[in-house]
Length: 508
Ligand SMILES: *Cc1c(COP(=O)(O)O)cnc(C)c1O
Image (cartoon, rainbow, N blue to C red; front, top):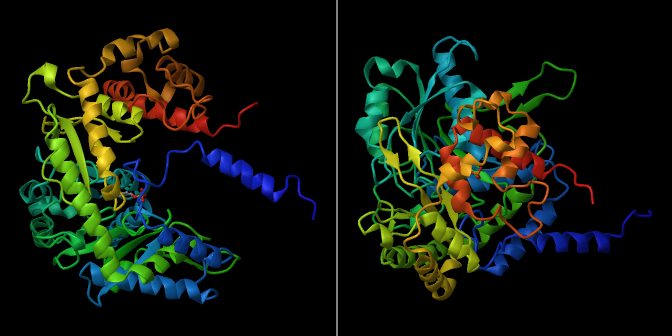
C-alpha cells in the first residue's frame, strides 16, 4: 500500500509535537502525571498496551483476556481496600467515569425504591464542597440536585454537618453521600467512619472517592479506617492511572452488594443489533490501559506499591516542612496522602506575604509546574482561600534537592507582591464587545462564540495561538483572579470557548 505520508515521517511529526508538551517524567510537573520514577514500569506498560491493542473490551465473552485482567484488578483493589466477598467491581476509563457510575447507580436505586422513573424526581447528592467536580458533572448528567456541605477551615467535612442534610425527614430524597479520601483540592481526609455512621442511620448509601488516595493511603501510617472496612460505605472509586502508575484510561469502581451493583449496568435487547450489556458509559473500549494497569500490579505487588508510596510519603513530608518554613506561605490543613495545597500565610505582614499563584508562576519560570486553584465561597459564608496544589509522586523524592531551592527562590521573587487586581483586568472587557449591561451581568446564554472569543482576547488569551510558545496558557495569577471575579457562568462560558477553539482546525 502506498501511504500519503511515510510511517517514519508521521512518527517524526508526533515526536516533534510531543517535544512542546510539559514533561511527563522527571517530577517537574506536580499535577496530571504520576511518575513512579521506574522506567522499567513504563516499558512494561507500553508492551502490555501493544499486546492488547487490537482487542475490544466491549465483549469480555469474545475476548476472555479482558475478563481475566478485570477480575485480577478488581480482586487486587478489593483486598487492598478492605472489601470482602460481597464487594464487586468494574474497571472504568478513569476517575470521572467511576464517580459518574457510582452516582448513576445510587440514583437508580433511589428511584426504584420510590417507584419513580428518571425525570420524575431529582434526588439529592450530598457532597462536601471539596468533593471532586466529577460529582457535579454526575449530578448534571443524571438529574440530581447537589447539596453542598461546607467544610472546615482545614478542609474536612464534619459528620455533624452531613447529619443536618440527611437526618430525619431530610433523608427521604438523598440518593448518595460522598466523602473524599483524600480531597483533591486540599488533601483533606474526610471523617469517613463518622459520616458513614450518620448516613447508615438515615438509610443513605455512602461513596468514598479514593480516586487519588486509593493506591497510596493503604501504605500511609496511622490513619483511621477510611475504606470498605467501614460499615455503611457502599461504593469506592480508585484510579489506577494515578498512584497505580498506569497510563491514562483506567480506574476501578468497587460496590458493596451484587444487587446494588447490577444497577450500574445498562442492558437492552430491544434493538435490531447485538444485545448490549454495558457496565460502563462507553461501548467499545480499549483493553490497553487495563492491560497496562494489570501488568504493573502483577510486577509491583503489594510490596512494590508500599515501597513507591514510601518514596511519595517521604517527599511529601519534606515538601510540607520546606514550604511550611517559607515566610509568607502556609500548608493548608493537615494533608493526608501524597498531595498538598499551599495558601498565603495571613499571619505575617502584607509585605512579607507570598501569593500562591504568583509563587506558582515564579516556579514555572524555574521549570516547575504547580497547579493554581481558585478561592471558593461556601454557602455558610466562609471562604476557602485560593491555593496552589502539588501532587507528589515517587520520583519527587529524587528531585527534592532541586525542587525545594526552586520553590524557595520563587517565593523570594514574589514576596510582598499582592494578587493581580481583577477589577483592572475586567475593566478592559466591555471594550472588547461585551453586552451593553457589562460583563458581570452578562448572561452566558447570550454570549455567542464570537463575543466570547473577543472577551478572551481582552484577557490576553488567544486560542488560535495557544500552545505555540510551549505548554500552558501563560501566567496563572491574573487568569485565576479574573476567573474568580467573573460570575461563574460567564467564566465557565469563556473557558469553554477557549478549549473549544483550541481544537478548531488552524490555517497555516
Ligand atoms: C482525579 C480525581 C477524580 C477524577 O478522576 P479523572 O481520572 O481525572 O477522571 C475524582 N476524584 C478525585 C479525588 C480525584 O483526584
